Length: 272
View (cartoon, rainbow, N blue to C red):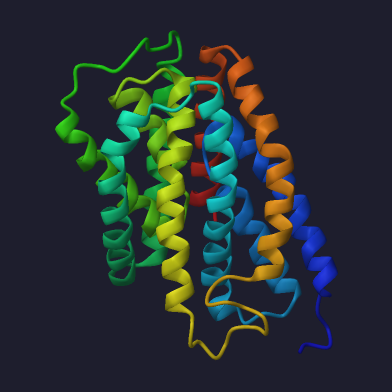
């Protein structure tokens, strides 16, 4: 135990506040909320005196575990509004799951700093593309062979696993710009795809950190249960709010909003 550390109650409250904001983002944009969750968890773990060598793995693993719960809520709420394209979900998912494993292997062999910069540039490029193309909304899937969707899922899963995200920041643009789903349905379908990705990823982080002696008391592999519980209590309250906003906003506004969201994420990663 650390004498100078956050109490479990304080960490829970900090994670709860984080979850409130992450839930809105998850429901509105179809992402798992990891863009907010990981930096906040890093701050909480730093204040708690957790070894910085394993803090990032612990933050990402905990974030992915919360994304499982968040995306169950988001997927159900989108499904109730006919916002999930289940045939495309089934086509993407095998590639996403395989890609999640491949991405972890690639990440272990590459420089983390390089990956962050490449991902930042990618986010800026996709965000700019979506803002530029926001003068209309697609009306349905384009004439794209369904045989390519598992390959698209492979790319989404690989990159998401390498960068420790739930996948929405990649799958929403892919579903909207490549597969041709209307923006609202792309957001809902991304939630369903991200559920599979986050499940596989979080289990991998639990296994990878199971015997790590540097982990703080109470950790389950690279997942911190106190922070996990705080975040999901917040996200379960506010994810439905984000879903309602996604279905209430005009598609053009939603597309532009998501584009600016990606720009902000990319710029932050480049200046990290």
